[in-house]
Picture 1 (spheres, rainbow, N blue to C red):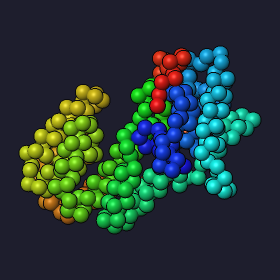
Picture 2: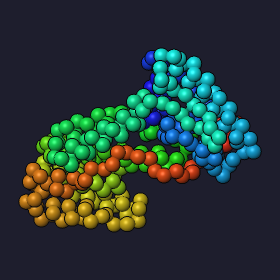
Picture 3: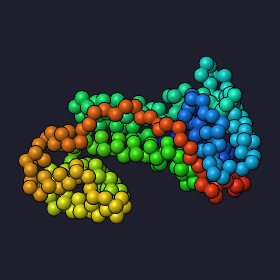
Picture 4: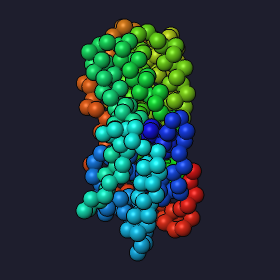
Length: 296
């Protein structure tokens, strides 16, 4: 059985997508998968599902959702999984979803990212770019995109999305060090048009444009980013972006160096992707009622 979180929630058994029930049941599964093989307190699950809109029957609704998920997992797991079945166990204070980590796309992504960042820090540009590209290729949209659309706003999902942007930036650094300025320009032109306030990605695009002999376009990208940052965040661009604009204006020889990308954008390897400490989150108020049955 395969569990996919990096996109709409999916559980596949022998290539077939399983029916997971309505939004409530899917949300319980999604939250437990984010914390797979770790006990999750009942109170934490209830807060994640309702927060300020908790009904009097919250525990019963949660128990029903867990029962439905247990039936689904038990029907498909079977004895072929030996000593590592997929199971949803209840304890005195909560639940734990037992799933081998290699059956979930999120741990696979985290391992690829960790190895890719280690190769990046070591200056092994080709292997770093390949590993990080493989990691990004696991994404099929925003993490748990169907639950987000239904109103879920968990901090774990925000953290994953931010990490995804950082991984893209790390891959771009490796690509720039390999001289792939045309590919970087094409990729980041699209990305920064959609996300103009992403300073690091904007800086990488500016460097790629400058190294392609397109100084005016690089400066125009800075102006767009500055306007977006001021409008969206109410602050000026950071020092990294301002210094890069100044270096482009003065045509600093350092920007033409093959090592420019490593010098400007390489940082120590980050630890394996981790979720933030436990915090409560919620489904949108409109999802607190019976119309939560929509969702496959």
